[in-house]
Image (cartoon, rainbow, N blue to C red; front, side, top):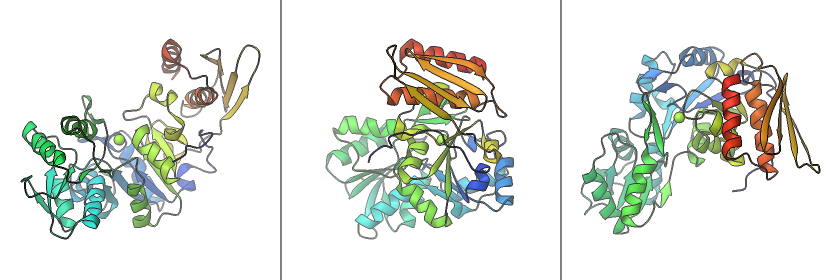
Length: 356
Ligand SMILES: [Mg+2]
Protein backbone atom coordinates (compact mmCIF):
# COMPACT_ATOMS: atom_id res chain seq x y z
CA UNK A 1 0.00 0.00 0.00
CA UNK A 2 1.39 3.39 -0.98
CA UNK A 3 0.18 6.60 0.58
CA UNK A 4 -0.65 9.45 -1.82
CA UNK A 5 2.11 12.04 -2.30
CA UNK A 6 -0.11 14.84 -1.09
CA UNK A 7 -3.15 14.14 1.01
CA UNK A 8 -5.07 17.31 1.73
CA UNK A 9 -8.57 18.59 2.31
CA UNK A 10 -10.75 18.78 -0.80
CA UNK A 11 -13.29 21.35 -1.88
CA UNK A 12 -16.75 19.94 -2.52
CA UNK A 13 -18.69 20.91 -5.66
CA UNK A 14 -22.05 21.18 -3.94
CA UNK A 15 -22.89 20.21 -0.38
CA UNK A 16 -21.45 16.89 0.76
CA UNK A 17 -24.95 15.40 0.41
CA UNK A 18 -25.24 16.70 -3.16
CA UNK A 19 -21.81 15.25 -4.02
CA UNK A 20 -22.45 11.72 -2.69
CA UNK A 21 -25.20 9.10 -2.92
CA UNK A 22 -24.42 6.86 0.06
CA UNK A 23 -23.08 7.66 3.54
CA UNK A 24 -20.96 4.99 5.23
CA UNK A 25 -21.20 6.06 8.85
CA UNK A 26 -19.13 5.03 11.80
CA UNK A 27 -21.31 4.77 14.91
CA UNK A 28 -19.44 5.42 18.17
CA UNK A 29 -18.48 9.08 18.31
CA UNK A 30 -20.40 9.92 15.11
CA UNK A 31 -24.03 8.88 15.56
CA UNK A 32 -24.01 7.99 19.26
CA UNK A 33 -21.74 7.85 22.29
CA UNK A 34 -22.80 4.99 24.53
CA UNK A 35 -26.60 5.11 24.87
CA UNK A 36 -27.02 8.71 23.74
CA UNK A 37 -27.28 10.33 20.31
CA UNK A 38 -24.51 12.71 19.29
CA UNK A 39 -26.13 16.17 19.13
CA UNK A 40 -27.67 16.96 15.71
CA UNK A 41 -26.96 13.45 14.35
CA UNK A 42 -30.53 12.07 14.14
CA UNK A 43 -31.88 15.23 12.46
CA UNK A 44 -29.01 15.35 9.97
CA UNK A 45 -29.45 11.69 9.03
CA UNK A 46 -33.24 11.99 8.68
CA UNK A 47 -32.56 14.90 6.34
CA UNK A 48 -30.16 12.79 4.29
CA UNK A 49 -32.69 9.96 3.92
CA UNK A 50 -35.45 12.46 3.04
CA UNK A 51 -33.15 13.74 0.28
CA UNK A 52 -32.88 10.21 -1.16
CA UNK A 53 -29.60 9.03 0.34
CA UNK A 54 -28.89 5.54 1.59
CA UNK A 55 -27.12 5.07 4.92
CA UNK A 56 -24.73 2.27 5.83
CA UNK A 57 -23.57 1.90 9.43
CA UNK A 58 -20.05 0.51 9.43
CA UNK A 59 -18.69 -0.46 12.80
CA UNK A 60 -15.67 -2.26 14.16
CA UNK A 61 -17.52 -2.84 17.43
CA UNK A 62 -18.66 -6.45 17.21
CA UNK A 63 -20.19 -6.69 20.67
CA UNK A 64 -23.83 -6.31 19.54
CA UNK A 65 -25.75 -7.97 16.65
CA UNK A 66 -26.74 -5.73 13.69
CA UNK A 67 -30.45 -5.99 14.57
CA UNK A 68 -29.72 -4.73 18.10
CA UNK A 69 -27.64 -1.85 16.74
CA UNK A 70 -30.37 -0.95 14.22
CA UNK A 71 -33.02 -0.99 16.96
CA UNK A 72 -30.84 1.29 19.09
CA UNK A 73 -30.47 3.67 16.12
CA UNK A 74 -34.24 3.73 15.54
CA UNK A 75 -34.80 4.46 19.26
CA UNK A 76 -32.56 7.52 18.82
CA UNK A 77 -34.62 8.69 15.83
CA UNK A 78 -32.12 7.56 13.18
CA UNK A 79 -33.65 5.81 10.15
CA UNK A 80 -31.92 2.39 10.05
CA UNK A 81 -32.87 -1.07 8.77
CA UNK A 82 -31.19 -4.16 10.22
CA UNK A 83 -29.40 -4.88 6.92
CA UNK A 84 -27.93 -1.35 6.85
CA UNK A 85 -25.59 -2.27 9.74
CA UNK A 86 -22.32 -3.95 8.69
CA UNK A 87 -19.91 -4.89 11.46
CA UNK A 88 -16.49 -6.47 11.77
CA UNK A 89 -17.97 -9.58 13.42
CA UNK A 90 -19.79 -10.35 10.17
CA UNK A 91 -16.56 -9.76 8.25
CA UNK A 92 -14.64 -12.08 10.62
CA UNK A 93 -17.28 -14.81 10.47
CA UNK A 94 -17.45 -14.57 6.67
CA UNK A 95 -13.67 -14.90 6.48
CA UNK A 96 -13.62 -18.01 8.70
CA UNK A 97 -16.54 -19.53 6.80
CA UNK A 98 -14.50 -19.28 3.59
CA UNK A 99 -11.50 -20.97 5.26
CA UNK A 100 -13.17 -23.73 7.31
CA UNK A 101 -15.66 -26.57 6.63
CA UNK A 102 -19.27 -25.80 7.61
CA UNK A 103 -20.02 -26.52 11.25
CA UNK A 104 -16.40 -26.15 12.41
CA UNK A 105 -16.01 -25.32 16.12
CA UNK A 106 -14.51 -21.85 16.67
CA UNK A 107 -13.38 -20.60 20.09
CA UNK A 108 -15.51 -17.53 20.78
CA UNK A 109 -13.77 -14.67 22.56
CA UNK A 110 -16.46 -12.00 22.46
CA UNK A 111 -20.16 -11.51 22.99
CA UNK A 112 -23.56 -12.15 21.50
CA UNK A 113 -22.91 -10.25 18.30
CA UNK A 114 -19.94 -12.39 17.41
CA UNK A 115 -21.77 -15.58 18.39
CA UNK A 116 -24.66 -14.73 16.07
CA UNK A 117 -22.28 -13.81 13.25
CA UNK A 118 -20.52 -17.19 13.56
CA UNK A 119 -23.78 -19.10 13.65
CA UNK A 120 -25.11 -17.05 10.73
CA UNK A 121 -22.01 -17.96 8.71
CA UNK A 122 -22.54 -21.69 9.36
CA UNK A 123 -19.88 -22.15 12.05
CA UNK A 124 -20.25 -23.46 15.61
CA UNK A 125 -19.19 -21.17 18.47
CA UNK A 126 -17.51 -23.03 21.35
CA UNK A 127 -15.94 -22.18 24.69
CA UNK A 128 -13.89 -25.42 24.67
CA UNK A 129 -10.44 -24.66 23.34
CA UNK A 130 -9.59 -28.36 23.03
CA UNK A 131 -12.11 -28.85 20.21
CA UNK A 132 -11.65 -25.44 18.56
CA UNK A 133 -10.02 -25.35 15.12
CA UNK A 134 -9.78 -21.53 15.12
CA UNK A 135 -10.05 -18.56 17.50
CA UNK A 136 -12.10 -15.43 16.82
CA UNK A 137 -11.75 -12.41 19.09
CA UNK A 138 -14.00 -9.35 19.16
CA UNK A 139 -14.70 -6.57 21.64
CA UNK A 140 -16.67 -7.54 24.72
CA UNK A 141 -17.22 -5.40 27.82
CA UNK A 142 -17.70 -8.63 29.80
CA UNK A 143 -14.45 -10.36 28.86
CA UNK A 144 -12.63 -11.82 31.87
CA UNK A 145 -9.21 -13.23 32.62
CA UNK A 146 -10.41 -16.82 32.23
CA UNK A 147 -11.51 -16.29 28.61
CA UNK A 148 -8.30 -14.43 27.78
CA UNK A 149 -6.28 -17.31 29.26
CA UNK A 150 -8.23 -19.89 27.21
CA UNK A 151 -7.68 -17.81 24.08
CA UNK A 152 -3.96 -17.59 24.86
CA UNK A 153 -3.62 -21.38 25.22
CA UNK A 154 -5.49 -21.97 21.95
CA UNK A 155 -3.51 -19.34 20.06
CA UNK A 156 -0.22 -20.70 21.35
CA UNK A 157 -1.18 -24.16 20.08
CA UNK A 158 -1.07 -22.68 16.58
CA UNK A 159 -4.73 -22.63 15.43
CA UNK A 160 -5.74 -19.74 13.14
CA UNK A 161 -6.59 -16.54 15.07
CA UNK A 162 -8.89 -13.91 13.59
CA UNK A 163 -9.45 -10.53 15.26
CA UNK A 164 -12.49 -8.47 14.35
CA UNK A 165 -10.53 -5.22 14.74
CA UNK A 166 -7.57 -3.63 16.53
CA UNK A 167 -9.15 -0.41 17.87
CA UNK A 168 -7.04 0.60 20.87
CA UNK A 169 -9.93 2.33 22.63
CA UNK A 170 -13.71 2.52 22.64
CA UNK A 171 -15.46 5.81 23.45
CA UNK A 172 -17.62 5.85 26.58
CA UNK A 173 -19.48 8.72 28.24
CA UNK A 174 -16.57 8.92 30.71
CA UNK A 175 -13.89 9.04 27.98
CA UNK A 176 -11.85 6.46 26.03
CA UNK A 177 -11.69 2.95 27.53
CA UNK A 178 -9.67 -0.13 26.46
CA UNK A 179 -10.83 -1.50 23.10
CA UNK A 180 -10.40 -4.80 21.25
CA UNK A 181 -6.89 -3.93 20.06
CA UNK A 182 -5.61 -3.81 23.64
CA UNK A 183 -7.41 -7.03 24.55
CA UNK A 184 -5.95 -8.74 21.47
CA UNK A 185 -2.56 -7.39 22.52
CA UNK A 186 -2.86 -9.02 25.97
CA UNK A 187 -3.33 -12.40 24.29
CA UNK A 188 -0.60 -11.69 21.74
CA UNK A 189 1.93 -10.81 24.44
CA UNK A 190 1.07 -13.86 26.50
CA UNK A 191 1.06 -16.21 23.49
CA UNK A 192 4.10 -14.72 21.79
CA UNK A 193 2.38 -14.08 18.46
CA UNK A 194 -0.21 -11.81 16.88
CA UNK A 195 -3.49 -12.54 15.07
CA UNK A 196 -3.34 -14.07 11.58
CA UNK A 197 -6.12 -11.91 10.13
CA UNK A 198 -7.73 -8.60 11.13
CA UNK A 199 -11.10 -7.88 9.49
CA UNK A 200 -12.32 -4.45 10.57
CA UNK A 201 -11.38 -0.92 9.65
CA UNK A 202 -8.89 0.30 8.40
CA UNK A 203 -8.88 -2.84 6.23
CA UNK A 204 -10.99 -2.16 3.17
CA UNK A 205 -13.11 -5.36 3.26
CA UNK A 206 -15.78 -3.77 5.43
CA UNK A 207 -16.12 -0.75 3.11
CA UNK A 208 -16.14 -2.86 -0.05
CA UNK A 209 -18.91 -5.04 1.41
CA UNK A 210 -20.98 -1.97 2.31
CA UNK A 211 -20.48 -0.29 -1.08
CA UNK A 212 -21.64 -3.49 -2.80
CA UNK A 213 -24.58 -4.04 -0.43
CA UNK A 214 -25.85 -0.45 -0.84
CA UNK A 215 -25.07 -0.08 -4.53
CA UNK A 216 -23.04 3.09 -3.94
CA UNK A 217 -21.68 5.02 -6.92
CA UNK A 218 -19.99 7.72 -4.85
CA UNK A 219 -19.88 6.92 -1.15
CA UNK A 220 -18.75 9.24 1.62
CA UNK A 221 -17.15 7.68 4.71
CA UNK A 222 -18.00 9.59 7.90
CA UNK A 223 -15.92 8.88 10.99
CA UNK A 224 -14.37 10.27 14.16
CA UNK A 225 -11.20 8.21 14.12
CA UNK A 226 -8.17 8.75 11.88
CA UNK A 227 -6.51 5.34 12.20
CA UNK A 228 -9.67 3.36 11.36
CA UNK A 229 -12.39 5.37 9.59
CA UNK A 230 -10.30 7.88 7.66
CA UNK A 231 -7.38 5.57 6.90
CA UNK A 232 -9.94 3.02 5.73
CA UNK A 233 -11.58 5.61 3.47
CA UNK A 234 -8.25 6.38 1.81
CA UNK A 235 -7.43 2.68 1.48
CA UNK A 236 -10.82 2.05 -0.15
CA UNK A 237 -10.44 5.13 -2.42
CA UNK A 238 -13.43 6.97 -0.90
CA UNK A 239 -13.92 10.55 0.34
CA UNK A 240 -13.75 10.82 4.13
CA UNK A 241 -15.44 13.34 6.43
CA UNK A 242 -13.92 13.67 9.90
CA UNK A 243 -16.40 14.88 12.52
CA UNK A 244 -15.07 16.32 15.77
CA UNK A 245 -17.69 14.66 18.00
CA UNK A 246 -15.57 11.65 18.98
CA UNK A 247 -11.99 10.74 19.78
CA UNK A 248 -10.16 13.03 17.33
CA UNK A 249 -9.40 16.58 18.42
CA UNK A 250 -7.28 19.40 17.09
CA UNK A 251 -3.98 17.86 18.18
CA UNK A 252 -4.65 14.50 16.52
CA UNK A 253 -5.83 16.20 13.31
CA UNK A 254 -2.70 18.34 13.02
CA UNK A 255 -0.48 15.30 13.64
CA UNK A 256 -2.30 13.09 11.10
CA UNK A 257 -0.05 11.04 8.82
CA UNK A 258 -0.74 11.30 5.08
CA UNK A 259 -2.44 7.90 4.86
CA UNK A 260 -5.02 8.77 7.53
CA UNK A 261 -5.98 12.35 6.63
CA UNK A 262 -9.62 13.17 5.93
CA UNK A 263 -10.74 14.87 2.70
CA UNK A 264 -13.26 16.98 4.67
CA UNK A 265 -13.57 18.19 8.28
CA UNK A 266 -16.84 19.08 10.00
CA UNK A 267 -17.88 19.91 13.53
CA UNK A 268 -20.72 17.33 13.50
CA UNK A 269 -23.15 15.74 11.02
CA UNK A 270 -24.75 19.09 10.18
CA UNK A 271 -21.62 19.51 8.08
CA UNK A 272 -23.16 17.11 5.51
CA UNK A 273 -25.34 20.02 4.39
CA UNK A 274 -22.38 22.40 3.87
CA UNK A 275 -20.38 23.23 0.77
CA UNK A 276 -16.81 22.51 1.88
CA UNK A 277 -14.23 25.16 0.94
CA UNK A 278 -10.98 24.80 -0.96
CA UNK A 279 -7.68 25.20 0.92
CA UNK A 280 -4.82 26.72 -1.09
CA UNK A 281 -1.37 25.71 0.11
CA UNK A 282 1.95 27.17 -1.03
CA UNK A 283 5.35 25.94 0.10
CA UNK A 284 8.27 28.32 -0.37
CA UNK A 285 11.85 27.35 0.28
CA UNK A 286 14.24 30.09 1.31
CA UNK A 287 17.48 30.71 3.15
CA UNK A 288 15.46 30.99 6.35
CA UNK A 289 13.90 27.57 5.65
CA UNK A 290 10.53 26.44 4.37
CA UNK A 291 7.52 28.65 4.75
CA UNK A 292 4.08 27.18 4.23
CA UNK A 293 1.05 29.42 3.72
CA UNK A 294 -2.44 27.93 3.70
CA UNK A 295 -5.57 29.90 2.87
CA UNK A 296 -9.15 28.76 3.45
CA UNK A 297 -11.61 31.50 2.46
CA UNK A 298 -10.71 34.38 4.85
CA UNK A 299 -8.43 32.30 7.09
CA UNK A 300 -4.68 32.53 6.45
CA UNK A 301 -2.23 30.36 8.41
CA UNK A 302 1.57 30.13 8.19
CA UNK A 303 4.11 27.58 9.32
CA UNK A 304 7.62 28.99 9.49
CA UNK A 305 10.66 27.97 11.51
CA UNK A 306 8.68 25.06 12.89
CA UNK A 307 5.99 27.31 14.38
CA UNK A 308 2.37 27.88 13.41
CA UNK A 309 1.10 31.45 13.11
CA UNK A 310 -2.50 32.47 12.54
CA UNK A 311 -2.80 35.85 10.81
CA UNK A 312 -5.93 37.46 9.39
CA UNK A 313 -8.43 34.82 10.35
CA UNK A 314 -12.06 34.60 9.40
CA UNK A 315 -13.41 31.47 10.99
CA UNK A 316 -15.99 30.94 8.23
CA UNK A 317 -19.66 29.94 8.46
CA UNK A 318 -19.03 26.83 10.58
CA UNK A 319 -16.07 28.23 12.52
CA UNK A 320 -13.62 25.66 11.14
CA UNK A 321 -11.81 27.52 8.35
CA UNK A 322 -8.84 28.39 10.60
CA UNK A 323 -8.53 24.74 11.59
CA UNK A 324 -8.80 23.64 7.94
CA UNK A 325 -6.04 26.04 6.92
CA UNK A 326 -3.89 25.11 9.93
CA UNK A 327 -4.20 21.38 9.31
CA UNK A 328 -3.30 21.82 5.65
CA UNK A 329 -0.30 24.03 6.51
CA UNK A 330 0.99 21.66 9.19
CA UNK A 331 0.53 18.64 6.90
CA UNK A 332 2.38 20.34 4.04
CA UNK A 333 5.22 21.24 6.41
CA UNK A 334 5.35 17.64 7.64
CA UNK A 335 5.40 16.34 4.06
CA UNK A 336 8.32 18.71 3.37
CA UNK A 337 10.20 17.24 6.33
CA UNK A 338 9.38 20.00 8.83
CA UNK A 339 6.73 18.46 11.07
CA UNK A 340 5.67 20.45 14.13
CA UNK A 341 6.79 18.68 17.27
CA UNK A 342 6.72 19.06 21.03
CA UNK A 343 6.08 22.59 22.30
CA UNK A 344 5.40 23.97 18.80
CA UNK A 345 2.59 21.47 18.28
CA UNK A 346 1.23 22.11 21.77
CA UNK A 347 1.30 25.89 21.16
CA UNK A 348 -0.49 25.45 17.83
CA UNK A 349 -3.20 23.37 19.51
CA UNK A 350 -3.59 25.98 22.26
CA UNK A 351 -3.94 28.88 19.81
CA UNK A 352 -6.42 26.99 17.60
CA UNK A 353 -8.48 25.83 20.56
CA UNK A 354 -8.62 29.40 21.87
CA UNK A 355 -9.60 30.65 18.40
CA UNK A 356 -12.21 27.97 17.73
MG1 LIG B 1 -15.92 5.97 16.13
